[in-house]
Length: 485
Ligand code: NAD
Image (cartoon, rainbow, N blue to C red):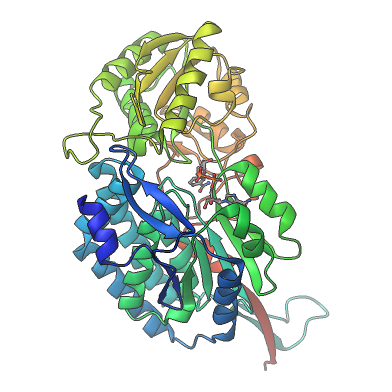
């Protein structure tokens, strides 16, 4: 038996977790999970019944967490230590179910440990505010204080495939840190990392009623996850169409949406082209190009476009891809063959409309080579839509006005990278790009796990993630006021 399959079986990762109990292993109604590189089935997860989903919400809702800040921090610290101790297991699991290369999955495991550490630190802080009330002519001798409390109901978390464990950590850790109860539904394409993460938290001392993991067919259980009477908040990371469906369906509930992106790297005429082309290729190919904040469009000033393109092609050719388990590789597969076929067809479509293919566009199953396309125009599907894979479409512009217009010209508004040292350019980009983040001389995906993160327009409603902001959105803010001399 395949090593990953054995690991999954030995640890009972083929079952859901309802209050820590392993539910549903080995049943007929199950979803197969395949290794995208070998195409072998590495395990199955149960298709939850509606009754089981309701049971998870009932159990979560009935439980009243009483962990002190000290205890929550201790659990999160312990879990971070467990992640570091089991880094190889975690990376192996992510690589087996997502096809990401070990370089990417080891990096992801490190990020998960960071999320836990930031959660442990944040929980020790009290962000309560104090307002004196004698501030105006009709003021009073009182003070208003603020205090955060966990939600009265349960949080539903729904996560995508691209970072099988880190997306989960970004929802579960703030929930634990704020003493909430959560029902998590990971992507059916990569469920095992999520279940393993839940087990680490139970092992670290988390009361199991605070975290439940259900798996299944979204067509059967998604509506229950969104509308169950006990759900107070739905936090979702994934594609735009499902995000908007959740917004429509959730009704009178808080909804946090982290949706798709179409992030540009903008290279101005004064940019260091070696640095810019390195950022462009890393931003485009890391995690097999499957990051919401991956570089999906390369906008370059026409006066440096030839040099930039040449260097991007050179660095693309040097990007090693293939067997995800080979530690020398920089890239493994994309999530499945269907995704690779979509990229190939979008690239072919762009070529038929006048774009020039300079590297890549080779496909073998779910393995898709890093690909460079020049002479791309903004209206081509490959850049108008989110192409969630290792494709580098290069678009030329003549002025900063045009760069900003192209950048703002899609439905998305997640993040961006700008390569320039000119302060006049930087200030314009920061104020005029319609995005959630602007990173100067860094990839769009640069962030701390702690810092506010999230997009606008079709990329999200402006509610941020990042441990600190997620903790805010997972709490109710109460004020109380006292007489004060
Ligand atoms: P997806 O939207 O296909 O699936 C996401 C999750 O939604 C999965 O768990 C899936 O089972 C579930 N789902 C399916 N149908 C549902 C329904 N009707 N109701 C509720 N949930 C349902 O996304 P994906 O393909 O797994 O991930 C890729 C997408 O996620 C990309 O668009 C990417 O940009 C986006 N993403 C965004 C961020 C961000 O922070 N903004 C981060 C990572 C990925």
